[in-house]
Image (cartoon, rainbow, N blue to C red; front, side, top):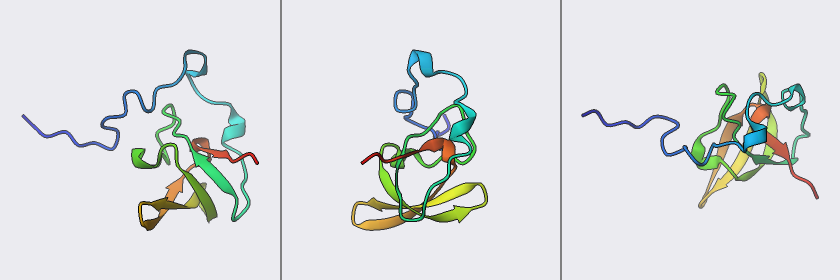
Length: 97
């Protein structure tokens, strides 16, 4: 049998939405703007597959580095390494202070 190692393996419960949150998110999530240096949370929206960050970064908080097309560049600490994550705004939520 083939070995299955897709991008979304082991995400059955991680990407699951609450009952009343199912379906597409509002348009305001698509047009959000962020300032460079702003802190944002990565919360993957499973109804939008484009620009989805890797499941490893779900629930992490990063700093906005800039914009790349429709997506945002984020700086994330992953263990001792600093990584750059490319994500669409549907999967990002601004941090509240």
